[in-house]
Image (tube, rainbow, N blue to C red):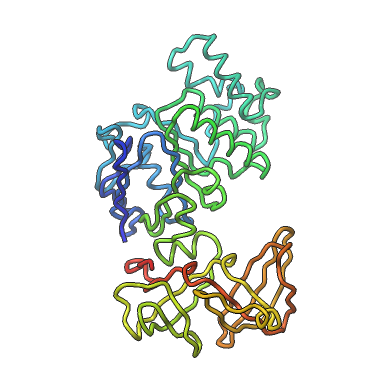
Length: 377
């Protein structure tokens, strides 16, 4: 499945067309096409080696595509050197000038663009406040912690308000509280300036918190693209469903396009065109979309229309403050997780039999685990 993605509402700022990057026999980016509209905050999300950072490096100009095209405002960038692309970059490494103070490091992009001293001072002071380094303005990078150095790098990339900002896991060195504060500031800056930001991370929560859209990478390809809500609630394939958030999967055998067999009993599935009796399918249920009931509660609560019910045994209960996670296992050995708010979670006991229920319409259906043949129900 290769993603060719177009936003017809407006002219894209950036277009990647059939982009490939090979290192010998290894394909880092595989025939990737993508449109990035004006003003979008887009995050590349994926595990190590998935192709997200290589794609970002080609966009920045630090890597040359093996083939394909990169367009910015309709103009090819393939032969344009990095310093002429009007694109800011924040690296995983800080890349600061060791002989310059924090203030001068941040102001360097403004100095080479020959902004007035008054304008430079105004912008640098604003960046120092943004990254909470006002008290460290006259220090050298060697006098800062790793997290503080990365904050200087972020401020330096933001200070001249480039046409597009590329960020490769820039907040990984920061503690959780400051990381979340800077995430909020990046969102606010994006809204205020209308600046395009392409952000690379392997952190799902960070991607969901920051992005207007998320591109999920695997083996050099984009295998899912959309808002965080759409990708979570309506995953386009089983890989995305398993990668983004927690998932339960049931391997079932189709009896029709709306019913299947699981461990000897019939369960309803969302209708899937083209399914024939005997097809093997994967049914995906998010933990918070399932309910685990004791046998007594199940007897007292009739199964609603449009819902499924299967038997399982509780293996573990985990209290997580506002929520409770219940792990169960079916007679056939399939492990499932059910999540509920602690205030409304039923009283369950490890080792006891329960009934697990879910709405048919809340579960996605997939034909295959193979990325090349993933289809959504």
